[in-house]
Image (cartoon, rainbow, N blue to C red; front, top):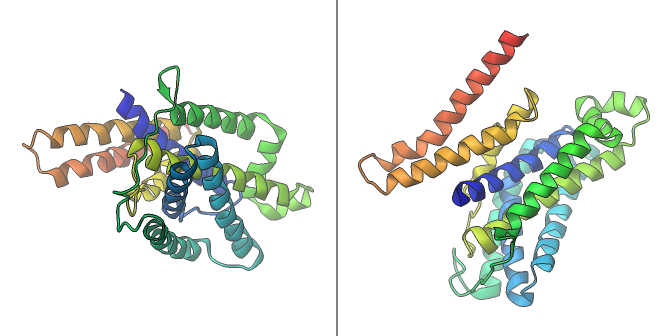
Length: 275
């Protein structure tokens, strides 16, 4: 159960980061890059300070700076969010590997950096507790407050939102802050707790599956956490079955993705019936 919850939180929080940017009309295609760069940042800071707070804060500052440039280039300079995302994924993956080499002299994996992270709240990993708490705050903000309504209005139609005198700058900053915090938490969680080491492409390209899982929120907001949990469960089951060795591992790797496709089909079909 703990492993499923740990797998769920890394998927769900990244979905929320993507959702936050979608609320201002942008696609966070570089989610994997953000996870990679925040993971190595948190690892380095924690190795030097042994401080959980400083590690997450530093990772958040890095993702915040990257997302700020993302918003500026796309909304002010007309750059494509898709092109930016593809480019930043490649750049940040390479940069994270370079940071590891410059700091520890390691290639691909932080074999010489020891991470002894065991911070828990009532026996539960602090990343899980913090992640669930922040996700609850995010949903309350988004669907129960006037500012959340205005934020979603910007994503639906920025020109109409501007006509209604909604503060676009504040909406962009709010979305940026939520997205950066969620992405930084995922990266920090992976390098400090989930794996307790850093490796190139530590995100394992889950950003792409998160783009699909986040899409369920267009049907109903509650479907994103449900879909994330379904994916985490079947991903865990696929890993467990691999140890038995009687089914080809490549076929097992397909199971979580096939389940999500079926889940998407039936949720869309159910929506049509309701309509």
